[in-house]
Image 1 (spheres, one colour):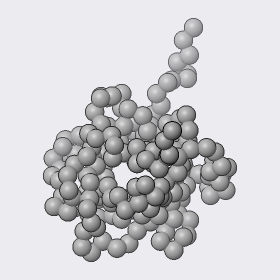
Image 2 (image 1 turned 180 degrees about the vertical axis):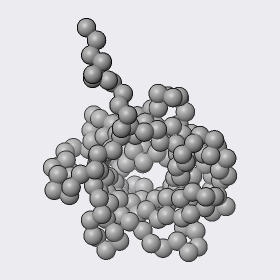
Image 3 (image 1 turned 60 degrees about the vertical axis):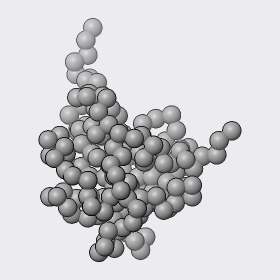
Length: 175
């Protein structure tokens, strides 16, 4: 019996088209930031994110899921993203769950007609100071047309070691 009223892929998931770049220092003129607290929930593809202003004021909390895109599961630039926005009190319930925790400052810089987000990692301490920029585009063609910014060291989109969850794992002590 088919359950067509219960699809496995829902319209509220969107394709995220993203590239990442390693950064050695913040570009001149970049100063305003938000602080992101991420918790990658153990055993899932879920991430709880709390966003606060530089002075600590709560902005938003969201539960997100990123999985390979059905369009092309092998393309590291494409992910299927689902987001649920949560009130601060509800997010606190999830914050008590087990997972990898990170804190980073996010700076935004408009360039090439898009907004680059430059993340400066604060925690875990093993990656403190690491800077990775990411940029999203509405189409794969627009994403492909971007050039590596002059302030970036190199592109790291295809290198999983520079993904946010991989950086979070570097803070876990090995056996």
